[in-house]
Length: 147
Image (cartoon, rainbow, N blue to C red; front, side, top):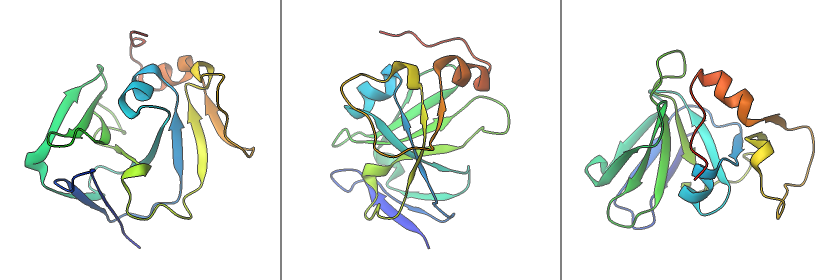
């Protein structure tokens, strides 16, 4: 089953052609600023998504290992893409909120759990959680600026 979605104005649409079985939450400061809260992202392999309206995307290099795409018309965030060399290169994390139908996609992990604001918590247990140090080690990159 494919999943479709778009930015707020519909200038950018997408279809994910690979199975979507889970979503993850990122609590880093950059994701919180980019999404206006916690970023819920669905991991999509490099060639697992067709994007229409690419001319309407603006790409922002947000770190030494990733870039973020948003619609230049409405400003909605669309995806985060890994640019670091290695097996994750080209992998995208598409915002769950951009999906036309996000039902039955469970939350299975949380990144930067040590930076999560105290004001919220997700119900349920058994989620994989990684600290900032563990995420940085995974990318073998310097820590981001916590502006």
